[in-house]
Length: 375
Image (tube, rainbow, N blue to C red; front, top):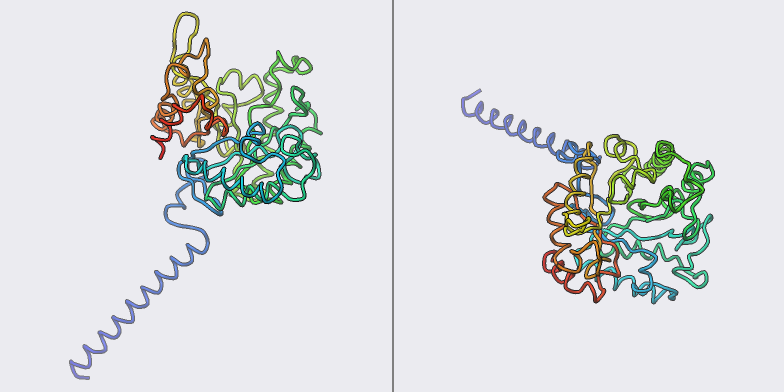
C-alpha cells in the first residue's frame, strides 16, 4: 500500500468515526426529548419549580385571579345562551389577559352546586335560572387555553349552603368531596383543583363544631387533603392541587389547616395561596403597623420545603374606607407595593380577589398603577 493510499483510508476511517459519534449524540438527545426529559427538567422537582406546565401554556410567574360566583354577572356569564356565553367568556378572558393575568381560579362548585353537568350536584342558580343545554365549564376551559391561560377548578369543599357546612369529620363528607373532584379531573382538561379557606367553621360561627379541638380538626382536614391530592395525581401527575388559606396563620390553623405539615412534607399540596388582604397601614389600637409585610414574612418563614407560594391580594379593598385598615383609602399603590414585596421575599406570584373588583370605579386609581406596572 502506498503512503497516499494509506492517508486516504485513514481519512475515511476518521470520517466514519466522527459520523458515528454524531449519530450517537443525536439518538440520545432524541430519546430524552421523546421521553419528556431534558437536562434542566431532570434537576427540577414539583416543589421547587415556580413554572406551571399545561397543555396550552407555560406559566413561569403566576399572575392569577379568582373568578367567584359573585363575579358571574359582571363577567357577562349569568343565564346566557351558548353563543352569548362563549362570546362574553372570550371577551372577559382577553381583558384579563391584557391586565397581565395568566392563571384563572374559577368557581365551578361554589355552594353545593355546579356550573357543569354533574352526577352529584345540582346546577348552580348563581349562574343559571334553569339548566342550560350546553356545558359552560368545557367552554371556559377551552377559552382560557385558547388565550394561553391556565385554568384551575375552584371548589368550596364543605359548604352545604351559605352559612351551613357539612361535617368534615364524617366519612360521607370525605367521600362526597373525593367523587366531585374525581368527576372534574376525569371529564375536563383542567390544569388543577383549587380549594379556598372554608374548612371547619370558625368556632363563633359553627356552634355544632365548637367542641372539636384544633388538633382533631387538623387530623380530619389532613386526611381529606391527602385523599384529594392522591385523587388528583392518580388521574395525572401533572395536575396541580392547591389551597388558599386565610392570611392570619393562627386563624387558619383554628379552622383545621395544618400549615406546618403542608409546608414541610410531600403528599399534601402543590402550591399555597395565603390570603394576605391587609395593607401596610393597619391600625392596632393607637399604633399603625405594616400588617401585610409582617404576615408575608411569617408565611415565607413557615415554608420549609419551598412549596410554590402565591400571595392572595385584595382588589376588593382597593379604594375602600376602613377605620382600621387605613392604607386602602390613603394610598393607590398598595397592590404594586405588595407585588414587589412578595417577589423580593422569593414568592412565585400573586392572585387577585376578585375579578370584578379589578374594574370597579372605586379601584380605578389603584388599578391604573397596577396596569402601568404589570404591562
